[in-house]
Length: 338
Length: 123
Image (cartoon, rainbow over all chains, first blue to last red; front, side):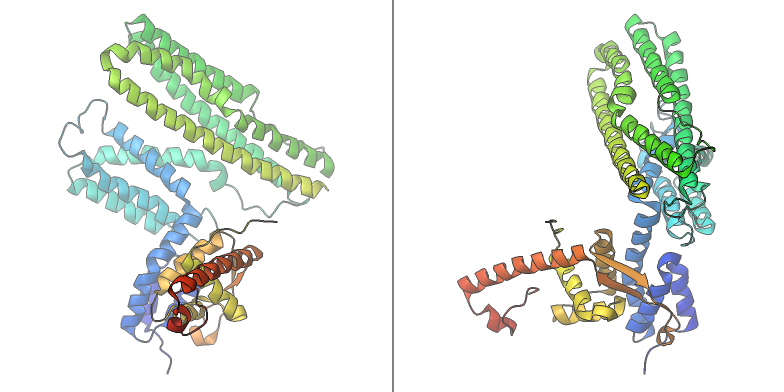
């Protein structure tokens, strides 16, 4: 006689499994088990792999790392890392638990989203983990309001950065019918990229202008001035050379195809040139700043430069990956044109 | 000629199971076939899921959901089949395993007898 799990067990498994994997996994569990205990044992063996699989596919490793880094920076700022108010206490590791809960909230909310919508996230899962984040902060004596403020800022920033994808209607594969939609979505994502880069640039300019006026050392002033000039150059480049362009409405299909292909190739070349227009403009200001601070903080400056170098390499590699993705898109358009 | 993606020993076993099961390759049958191939060792269903997932990411296999079947409480099955890249990787790994097996047999001898077959790549 074949085993069939009781309804409560089936419901428990359906509740625990991500919706995208639930259908076939529930069937496999039912078919492979011989008793309730066996069913639970199989469920325990399958569950971590299935969740991890959906985290990788829907939240992605890069997205989760991004969320982790962004929220950590937001928490450190909110808790006043520069002033040492929180970190003067002997247990900064207490922050690790609420931070890990927050990262889990983002990854699991997407992993448990509606499988028919790639960017849909499960609100009960998300808010459940947010409650766990704040509860763990309270239990570990981490300032809850500051944690909530930092994470809210991180959340809003993430929304702003991912807006083109969150609000986009899923597109059918590229064809002559969907070409105009693909071209518009691409231009919209370029517009958002430039908008968020400009917003971050304004913050960097504000911080450096403040440091410029408060610095007494002329060398430090020169360093902050050069950084402001570098960011202004990047913002001008984004506005004049890497800008989004409206998709013409009066073109025939072949003309539209040529426009979209040209635009993809233009943005691909811009990403390939990132070391020159995006990274290098920071270098003069950073070098002058490092020289001006060398006498007082020697070793720290060296450590900071190593961190910056690693970040630069990371940004460069990410942009190379983006350029390669665009190269594939250019190829797809070329196939359609033929 | 395209270079085959390198695969580990357990991945080789999973690909072999999918190949052997042909049209009937889905989670439970693949798990059972792997159990037969690696006996007396055992492996959990979770480990099979993880490997299937990895092989799909490597584009060595592809999967699709079948229609619901009454014997599984009306649940669908996720079927798997080898892609051409998976077949290439499997062939290449089998050639390597055969060389390893022949070398061990040549030096130690008696491996075929111990395995009960002429050649068994997963032992």
